[in-house]
Length: 312
Image 1: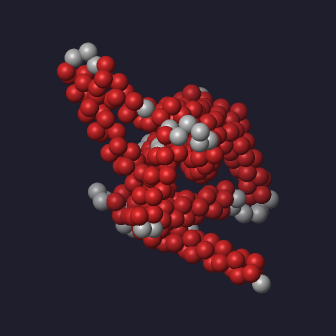
Image 2: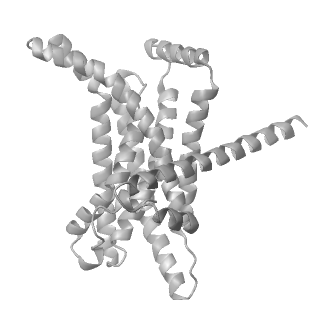
Image 3: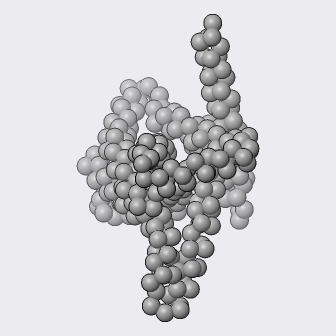
């Protein structure tokens, strides 16, 4: 993982004991991942019926809280076990391999999105879009199943990014007492969830705000602002869709680069200087795309073998 992405402050965790101060340090260190989290999850919950947008965001937010309720004790337990093993001369890394599995999954999701975009015809995409619009417009169609798919996809993505946020935060308080570690991780989990999904909720309701201003605005300026928001909202959603895919490769590839010592040491030579951050991110993205393509190939191969077996 490129150090330039997260190390926004010097690691002064070992010198500070106060949980509130430590939380601020951890929050600043996870700012890069928070941006990726926002981009990914905002584009995950778009495309549902307007009157169901906020309930869907709330459902994903609850899933995110559940993710963190699982991840915080799991991270503390794994870190404690890793420390215990090291104390007995058994240097087996536990957290990094788990993160790498999550990173590979993010890369797989990103490549799968690209494969769908480039391998499916425009006619198929238009047909799918028409079916979606018809389903949303038809009051008899049960949209719960569609929303559940959106929620599950967003929560899966959130789980990987939440794991990275928790691990980065844990690294800032690694030398602190257990209660300090627990306090910081719980605070970070709550701050990041409220911050991310509060912003996501605002983003997905931008078009509603624009429509209201354009229709009910007290004056020409308000109506013009509303029309501007209506024109801007679709472009923002399209940007978030692209940014979400890019973030999958940057975060997933960054995790893999950080976990593979040879790759991490190689890119370190090029990560210095004014353009170091650019080379690091490009390298992470390239690794992410390559890893995602390999995982996708493996998944497709296994699926094909299963089909062949089922026919025999």
